[in-house]
Image 1 (spheres, helix red, strand yellow):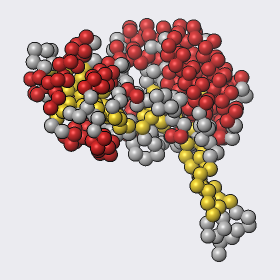
Image 2 (cartoon, rainbow, N blue to C red; image 1 turned 135 degrees about the vertical axis):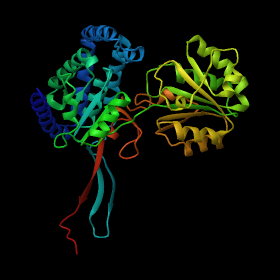
Image 3 (cartoon, rainbow, N blue to C red; image 1 turned 90 degrees about the horizontal axis):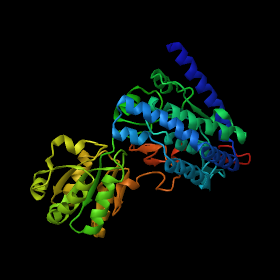
Image 4 (cartoon, rainbow, N blue to C red; image 1 turned 180 degrees about the vertical axis):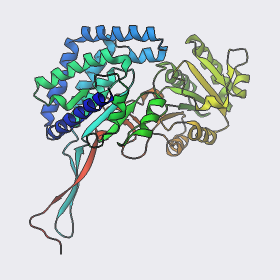
Length: 422
């Protein structure tokens, strides 16, 4: 059985490598036509997509998947419309491939610049969310890459239905069908093979739980673009607008619980805690959000159901209606807390003080830092990337939401006219 998986994945890799060479020379018009064709097939097959997803949802309930995982797994008409919109937005974006920047003459007379090029073959491993299949395919196609997609077993029917729409779009426009390949086995050995094929795969992007990403980071022989946790903060400064603070802190936690850019810890300047926290606690209570607070928070919210927070709470990504709250004496204490307990993902400050907002942006070491905005905006679609393949909290190659440019590299271009080095 293992040899069958080895052969199967090697075959996918070989096909992807060949397709990547054709994709690297595809024109912007060809790539855009393909994206529009895929969008058309998604719309035509929307009922089939919902039917396939229903099978996955029923199986998920039977397996006892929790509410957050089921939310990630679900497809509905609005999410299908969002996938279609993502495709059209990616098509409308400027094509980075072939851009030459910084071309200049050297003293020798040659011209030197840098051209943006595809990475080649991108392996993407993800759990639950079937919309990732279309996000990943669209960004890889537009950036001239081939991709091998390995979705979670719980979304097998949904992913295969989406893949059929992708293949139909590729065939309709004459693009290499193997530019996008969706692994059709749920065997976990397929992941082990995919992350150890540097001869075929240029980079791996995992999207899923911490356990998956830790395993891939540990075992991969291919470079990995990743983030582990989404422990995001909102800090409400004593010079913040309380109305804005309430809107942002409520949205950052309750808009969706199961995402990596959902706020998990609220930091509040102690000078405004008595004014702010009771109002927020009442709103959170309506949404049945469990609150866990520091001693000062518990004292301010005496008479409510707030629980005492533990040290572990400050470094926990709940992905659930649970929020930890800590009162701090000033912005410096807030920044220290974020850099110590956060995951370098997304953090926001609510303040009307320009100097403090600049300090927060400069000193918080995260891939997205915000002023007076919900952490839920940390998303490729909201950043105008069309869609995202993932979030990177690493500092090398790409950081933050990974869109088109994050799936490219550069090579030097040198122009001469018979020049020789003397």
